[in-house]
Amino acid sequence: MKKKSFFSLFIVLVGLSVQGQAKKWTLQECVNYAIQNNISIKQSALDTKTALIDKRGAIGNFLPSLNASASHSWNIGLNQDITTGLLRNQTTQFTSAGANVGIDIYKGLQNQNTLRKANLSIVAAKYQLLKMQEDIALNVANAFLQVLFNKENLKVQKEQLGINEKQYARSEELVKAGSIPRGDLLDIKATVAQNNQNVIVADNALLISKLSLAQLLQLKDFENFDVVDDTNMRDENNIMAQTPSAIYNKAIEGRTELKIARTNLEIAQKNVDIAKGAFQPTLQGFYSFNSRVSYADVPVFNNMGNITGTRNAAPFFNQFSDNKGQSFGAQLSIPIFNGFSVRNNVERSKVSLERSKIAVEQQDLDLQRNVFTAFTDAKGALKSYESAVIAVEARQGAVDYAKERYNVGLMNSFDYNQAQTLLTNAQSEVLRTKYDYIFKIKILEFYFGIPLIKN
Image (tube, rainbow, N blue to C red; front, side, top):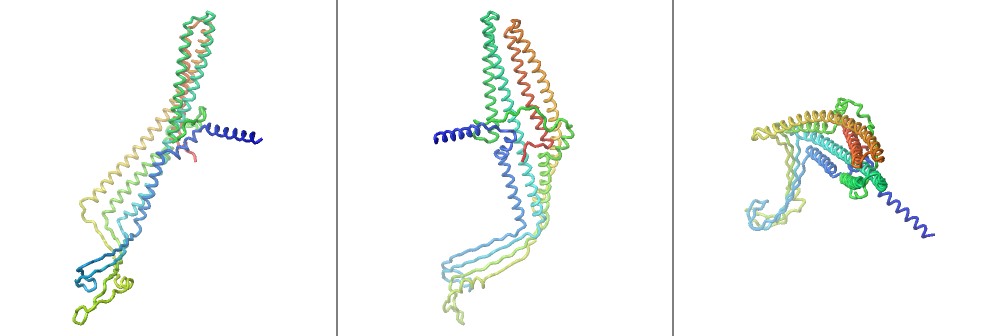
C-alpha cells in the first residue's frame, strides 16, 4: 500500500514538473517580465534614483552648514607661553575646539531654481524610464510575433513535406504500374529532400527566434521557453477606423518622447535662470564658537616681575569656559568683474535653451511623420495580406487542378512540383504579411495611447 502511495506521489510530482516546463508565455506575460528584468530598464531606473539624490542635494542648499573642529598639540622646547606671552623652555599641551555655522540668506534665487530644476529632472528621468519600457515592449512584441510566424511557417513546411511524401508513395505505385516514367519519381524524391531541408531551416529559425525573445526577457532557462499559439488576425481596438490626424492629435497629448523634449526645455530654462542668478549679490550669515585648554603649569610672578614658581593649570572645563569666544555676522558679496565667466555661463545656457526649443519642434515633426508613415504602412500591410490570401487561394486551386492532371498522366512531375512550390511560397507570404500587419497595428496603437504595458 505504501509503495502504491509513493508511486502515485511520484507520478503527481513528475506531472507537475512537466507541466511547469511546458508553460507557454503570452505576449502580456513576456512584456511584463521584460519590464521587470531587462538590463536597459534597470539602468534607466538607476537614473531616476540619481535624480532623487540630486533633489535631496538641492534641498540641502537651503539648510545651514555646520562644521566642528578640534585639535591637540604638544610643544617641546622654547615656546611662547600663551598665558604670559613670554618665551621659555617648557613642554606644553594645548587642546582647541570650535564650531562654525553658515547659511545662505540670499543667493540670486539660485537655490530655488536649482530645486525646481531637480524636480524637473525627476520628471524627465521617469519619462525616460517609461520611454525605455515602451521601446522594450515594442521589441518584445516584434520578437513574439517573429516566433509565431516561425511556428506557423514550420507547420506549413511540415504539411508540404507530408503531402510530397504521400505523393512520392503514390508515384512509386504509378511507376510500378507503368503509368509514369521513373524520372518523375526521381524528381519527386528530390522535392521531398528539398522539403526536408526546408523543415530543418524553418525549425532552426524558430529556435533562434525563441532564443532571441528569451534573451530579450533576460531568461536563463531558454531551452524550455515557448509562447502561446495566438495566431488570430485581429484589430482589437479598431485603430484603422481612426484617421491619421486623429491618431496624431492623440499622440501629441500622450507620447513620452514629446514629454521628454518638453521637460528638457523647462530644465534648460531653469539652467538659464540659475546662471543669471550669479550676477546678483549674495548674502550669507555666519556664527563661530571656539575655546582652548592648556595643560602647562602657570608661572607665578613677584612684585618685581620675576617668576617665583608655578601653580597647576586650571581644571579642563574651567579653562574651556574661561577661554571661549564667539563671533557672528553677515557677509555680503557683490560680483563686479570675474573674467566674463558668469556672462559666458549665461550665454552657454541660452544656447542650450535654443537647442531644446529646436528639439521640441523636431520631435513634433518626427512624431507627425512617424504617425502618418505608420498609418500608411499599416494600411499597405493590410492590403498586402488581403492580396496574399487571394493569391494562396488561387495557388491552392492551381495545385488541386495540377494534381488531377498529374494523376491521369497529363502533367509531368516537374510542373506539378512547381505548382506545389508556388503554393508553399504563397502560404509563407500570407504568414509574413499577416504578422507584419499585426506589428504595424501595435505601433499605431502605441501612438494612439493604447499600451502593451498593463498594470
